[in-house]
Length: 201
Ligand code: GSH
Image (cartoon, rainbow, N blue to C red; front, side, top):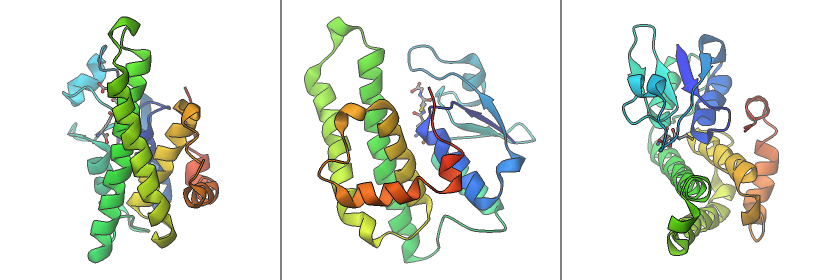
């Protein structure tokens, strides 16, 4: 299997963390691929018409995307740990994944606004709206982390989201006023799967 990814992508990191945790990492060949809303990569677009990474290309050429689909696919291949629980715990895990991914969606939109949009066309209220979503998601996690399991797809998504904020948004100082999430992340980021996938770029 070939994973089109970027070392800075938090969504691709979710896939890699899950692959480490399930013991599937050696079955995945990673290929660095560019992805930008203003300059899509032909290689990525050939597999994912949305031009987004991550995309997982299977042996028969089938492409899977996005990170949620890829993670669930890999989890289904795992003969070891599973990060998508069954029963009621499943909906809790998937909802936390959606919250962390939604935080990331707002962070990516903010990042594109800051680095891609010409300065004369920037709209402060729009960026403030996205940052408001990031802060609201973090505040919700502050009340959720105490009840979270040690590891599931929701915790992986949260860990990757916080790693991305550290990489791209030190100005948000997300730890301030959120001691529970900060303490949770200080421990979670020491997992070997997280240490092996620290974002760069
Ligand atoms: N919902 C998607 C997922 O979970 O995989 C989001 C993927 C995504 O937005 N990836 C970014 C990207 O490819 C890189 S971190 N951006 C290029 C674009 O928006 O055109």
